[in-house]
Length: 262
Image (cartoon, rainbow, N blue to C red; front, top):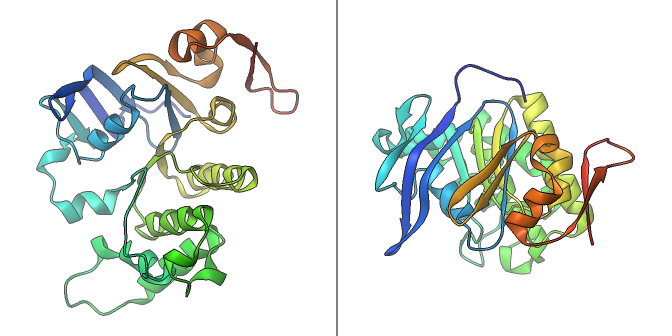
């Protein structure tokens, strides 16, 4: 990830509650543009809450989240959605909705109430379906899809939104291994070719190490480590965050960190 002077997205000493319980404690984080940041940590550590706070869905009760230096909470909904797209862990839509119709929902931030469907809208949806390999399933209802196909349909909708910043909560859920790797390669391509900024919650430590420019390790609502995979992926850190013992070595093909459990 290139070192740039101005982060595109920032959390400044935020405290965030989920219900009555404080989940995020005095957390600060800078997201540089045109990079893939992976957020890792054990279940319940606050990863999803942090992502929702960065996306403006959960306002912190202390501290602030900034997009290009502006407080996220002050931005109009459509204006924010044109810059930032968030795919939650369990998105919902009518079960009989067709894939094409779902993907078209991603164009909402770019359209007025009575605007005609434009060539730009059509091209954005077609590209999103192609990138996610969902073109042949565009006329299928969601309830006729497998879990992995449904996940790719939601990712296509997110891509159709054409935001510069993508916040993805466990996007590889329900995908088999080949589609997990295809999706992560796609995210890598979106960063390198299209200049996207992506922040993603991931579960697989080794996949994060292979594809992410930056890894953020979380434990109990705080960040315990943040930086390039080479710096963050250490055996002591993984034991502290996940409670697992093992060895970190170099991947024989990529040279990236590779964790082997004991």
